[in-house]
Image (cartoon, rainbow, N blue to C red; front, side):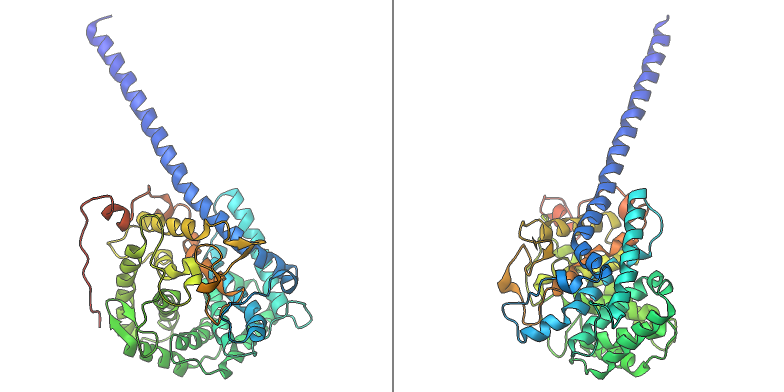
Length: 415
C-alpha cells in the first residue's frame, strides 16, 4: 500500500469520526432542548393537576384548601370567589397547549387527558346541580375572574368547539352576568373589554363601548418606553405584564377582525409590546431571579406573562431570539418553583420563593397564585418551533454578567 493510499484511508476515517462526533453532539443538543419542553410540561402538570383533576371529578370544593392572605380584607368573600378565580387562571395559562395538536406520544396522551378534564370541569362549574357549581354574581372580583375564563377560550377555541350547545349558552350567560359590576378605574377596564371580546370572537352581541372605553383610556395612560400606568399613577410593579400588554394584544387580535377603526392604535400597541418584551427579558437575572417589587408579587412566573405571550404569538422583536427567551423563562420557572415550600399538600402556597405569607395582598386567596400558569403559554408552540428546537442560547443577563460585549439599550417613546 502506497503512502498516498494510507493517507487517503486515514483521511476518510478521520472524516467519518468527525461526522459521527458532530452527529452525536447534535443529538445531545437536541435532547437538551427537548428536555426544556419536558421540564416545562412536568412543572405545568404538577401545578395544575390538582385543580383540573378535582374539578373534573366534581370534588374541587372538597379538596381545595380555603386559604387567604394574612392581610385579607374579607375572608369569607375571598374564599367564595376562589373557585372561579382558580378555574380562569389555570385555563388561561394552559389554553394554548390544549389548542395544540401533535407532539410525542406521551405529550399527546397527557393533552388528551387534560382536554377531557377541562371540558368536564367547565361543565361541572356551570351545572347548578354539581358540587362545584360556580356563580358569577358574588362581587366585582368575578369580573376579573370571568375575563381569565374568557381569554382562555379565545386562546383555545378547541374548548369552545367541543363544549356542547347547552354549556356554551351557560358560559356566555355567566360571563355576561359580570356586566353588572363597575370595573375599578385601572387595568380592570381591560377585564370588561376582554369579556366583550370573548362575545365578539364567538359571534354573540358585544358592547363596543366597553371595548372602546378601555382602549381609549389605556392610550391616555401610556407613559412611554413600552409601559402604561395602571390607573392615574405609575407603579413599578408587573401589571404591564400580568394584565395590560397580554390583554391589549388579545383584544387587538379579536377586535381588529371586527373593525378597522383601531388600526393605527393597534400598530402602536404592537410596537409597545415589542419594547416591553425587551425590558422584560433584561429583568431576568442570570439565575432566573428578578426584582421582587410591587404588589401581586406572589404571582410568581406570571410576572413574565407578557414575554411568554409574545413568544407564543411569534412576535418577538429582532433583539430577542426564541432560544434566549426560552432559556430565560426556563430559569424563571426553576427559580420560582424550586423552593421545597412552593407547594403544600400539592397546592401552591402564597409567596414568591416558597411560602412567604407576608408577601400576600389583601385580595389573595388559594386561587390567586395560579395565574403563574401563564408563563407556560409557549407550550402552545410545536416542539419543532424554533422556540423549542433551536440550540440553547444565553439570555441578556447571562451574557452581560459573564463579561461578554453586548449591545447597549435605549428607551423609546412610541407615543
